[in-house]
Amino acid sequence: MIGYSVVTASDGEEALSAFRLLIPDLIVLDVMMPKLDGYGVCQELRKQSDVPIIMLTALADVADRITGLELGADDYMAKPFSPKELESRIRSLLRRRNDRATTAAISNLGVMVVDNLKIDTNKRQVYKAGERIPLTGIEYT
Image: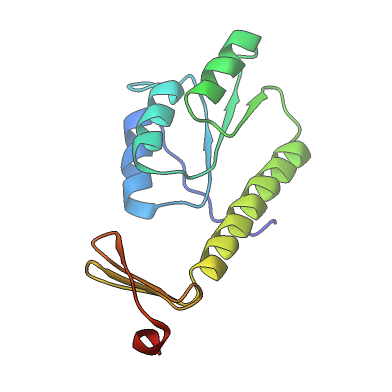
């Protein structure tokens, strides 16, 4: 057991509903689903999220792969597939997502935002409604 919690959906509409309810860390998506195909689900997901998406499907032509990637999938695997390879790709995407989140959190240390006021203690700068407010060293301390 790898330790992932898995939720399944029987069609594209159910997949979107489950996404909105659960907000998963990663999605493995088949192209050939009833009601709304995987391409449509991928497009809808990209309108609202940057969640990693792996397309896992029987459609293996280069054109199908390009379509999936251009619609926003992060990776594309054709069936039949190796479960170990899928596991490796999942770990890789989750690792990159976690690395980006850590980098963003570190870069936001020392930044406080209240309504339209932003104080960046690292750069010793203050912004109101996106415009920098010029301060002297005495005013900032």
